Length: 403
Image 1: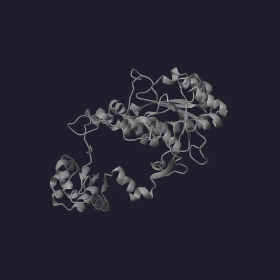
Image 2: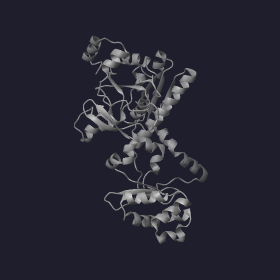
Image 3: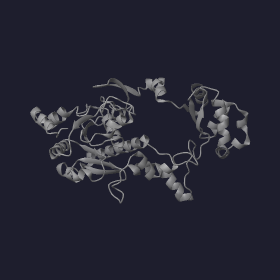
Image 4: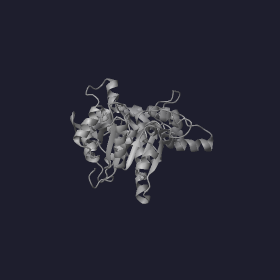
């Protein structure tokens, strides 16, 4: 179990998730101290384990995928072949010793295996189960399969993503991470509810609805004005300037956003360009209407400076500006290093590696080790938690029940 003192110390999660969104949610629970036991199998490998293999950019095999090793830090892995009833019986025994079950299979899959919410609630009435799917467990489209671009497209957010006069821009991994965060939040709320009432519950999470929840202002605006939001690229519906500007160095850019008159005056002062004093830019509406010209003037100034120099000048003046950092620049950033954003973990086959730590500075929230090898914790889960003898585990392996 997780050590005492962590926010979720003593909470055990049986984790059926795979790919991206689901594992992100259980990763956050693990960072908060929950013991997360990932149920997986060679009979159905996690997409994240093989994703980099199909992309052809890694040779280390299923235990060394970058995506898997990012999304599964601090978890335990037990390999149970759910095609076999004996394995499903072991899962049921594990659930009886767990507080939470999280899964992101299509609606109905676990029910057909005799491990749906009603089945598990009969074994343990106070169990909390979160089921994450593309569009939810009910409705005429509930059987839809989906990945991040599907969720974004169905939610409405895909239609406003991209640049004017261009096709909608598909959204990828950032959507999954948003869904995973919503999953973790829902589980925390259910744990608080159970602590108050003693009651478990089934959480039906629609990935599409998570993304639709980010569209509230667009829906309200349409109801009030009848106007649909447009694709704006890097621009904002009210703020100007608002964009990315080329700097002197190759591949160097900075982002600048100005929200009010004080920030506009600060930008004018920092740039010192008399063209910004024109009547067209005197009011916020004028700046928004004349963004093409405004962006040209700003980029004339930024293109003569390195991104670090431009950011230093603008931040000193009180303007919200930041370099557009590559992964390499981020890893070398002194602020990031001082904040210990990247932490070291020791992986069983890759050795010492830097990974991204928890997004909070919170007492007891920390990394609890590297991502697991496939089946790395079989002996712990089957032996210590479920009480099987070594010879029993060996037979289960021989029968490909533990597989």
